[in-house]
Length: 286
Ligand code: UTP
Image 1 (cartoon, rainbow, N blue to C red):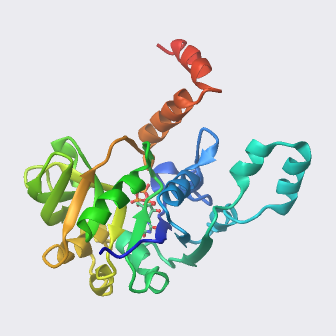
Image 2: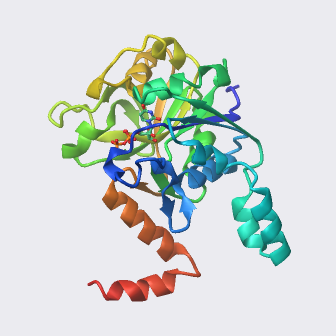
C-alpha cells in the first residue's frame, strides 16, 4: 500500500534571469501562456491529479503570485453581475487549501523544497515546476500518480534529450527500462554529454517520499553552486525505488524564451476560439 498524496509544492523563488526585464519584480511563473499564468496551469494540473493542499515557495517581491490564488471579491462580484460565468470560473481559487513561505535567498531547487519540510511532514508529496508546461490529457501528474500507485517510491517525469543537452538536466542511470517506465540505479545532475549515463532527463514533475529531507537537510552545494534536488534524490536511490515515467504529452521549457513562445503558439492553436485565426495569422510570417 503506497502513501497517498494530497500535498504539492510549487517552487517559484528562482531569479528568472532568462526573462529579465519582465521578471524584475514579477515571478517568471506569473507570465501568461495565452491568457493564463504558467503557475495556474500547474495548479490546475495538480488539482486534477487529486492534490488538495498547495504550497508555494516564493521569493522576495513575489506576493502577486500568492494573491493570484486568493479570492478577488470585487472582481468576482462584477463578473457575477455581468453573468460572465466563464471568466468567473477562471479567477476562483483552487478548491483546497493554499499555503506559502519565503525562500529568503534562491540557493537552489533543493533548498526551495527544503523550505516546505514542515508543511510536508512525513507524507509523500508532489513537486511541480511551473516553467515546465505540459500539454497532456490526462495531465502529467495524474499519469505519474497512476504509476506511483503501482510502483511506489520516488517517481519523476522524464523525456529523452539530445545528448549535447544532458549538461542542462538531471540524467537517469538506467537499470531497467520497458520503453515507458525506467527504473534508475543512479542519477547525475547536469553531466557532460560524454559522461552522461543516458539521455533520459528529469523534467519538472516529482512524486517524492519524505526521506529526501534527510539528505536536503545537509544543504550540500552541487552544480552551479546551488543546493540541487537531484543530488539528494540520487542519494535515496539505493534505499527507495526510483522510476522515471516517459509521460504522454508535450512539454514546453517555458524557463527560456523559445520554449515560452512555442507554448503560446501551441496552446493558442489548440483553442477553438483562437486556433483558426492564429493559424491564418502565422501564414504572414512564413
Ligand atoms: P530555474 O533554474 O529554471 O529557474 O529553476 P531560475 O533560476 O528562476 O531561472 P534563470 O535560469 O535565472 O532564468 C527551476 C524552478 O525552480 C525554482 C524556479 O522558480 C523554477 O520554478 N527555484 C529555483 C526556486 O524556487 N528557488 C531556487 O533557489 C532556484
